[in-house]
Image (tube, rainbow, N blue to C red; front, side, top):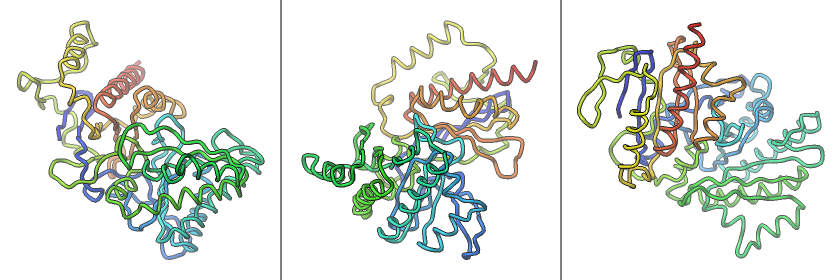
Length: 384
């Protein structure tokens, strides 16, 4: 892992994802919503890993803002009901962390049995129906008479949903009247996410989603399943093979504060150790250097299947400029680069937050440069 300190109080931490097991990886979900002792009180906590998988059955859903609020409930009441009734454990990604090219957070549900998961799924679909009936109609959740649900499904389970020659999905469509579509996988591997979109009456959506759930849980003893379940829903990481080994894990944790604002720190370059300064605008020579490096890298570097993450500690005062109104800034960069971007609080440090960028190497570097522009623009605007 390499840490780079910049003169404007921005610390960069770089990590390669080596495909180590979920328990060895240090990605934290924003809020893993648990309810203690059946008292109905919401107890958000931060996980020390990605998603802490403690139950055999796992399901992941794309969750627009209105559905996320409905699933949590006032004061965590709905979460409490689901936990008490079905022993379910639910987690949501951060408010600013969306599945690529959507405005949806990822909901991860865990239960001890397939049947319990089906009941949790039924309750979530019922919440979608309630939202639509109450007038909260949108492209993400549907309209009166046709609710919508999007499920993140590992590629290995998609084959079972489709069936030989498309027989199973045809039977599902014919018997329920639901519209079912499946996105193309972004890469190979049994744990690569594909989005299954279901639209129809609540009963139809429930019937189709139950079959999807069955196909997913039938694979929960496979070696790659825990890896898929542990990652909230980014295709670049879902495809990693769950192998053990050395090296650094997938680290979303905040960079140490003693790396901040230290102009004496130097970072390695191809020619040795040279100080990094980023106050100078990109001139033709620096652009040429960037292009030249990219063009001369061997193909195995750019095509490395491992994930790549950058973590930056940024002043809290500039976060608004980074995110943009309604998260438009990060959404735009995510859509342009195919990366996942999130901003998190740092416990005990109210003046700084952590900017996290993850994706393939070239994409992550591109997203970092675009976010750096937003950072510098925001800094300049504050100075005027």
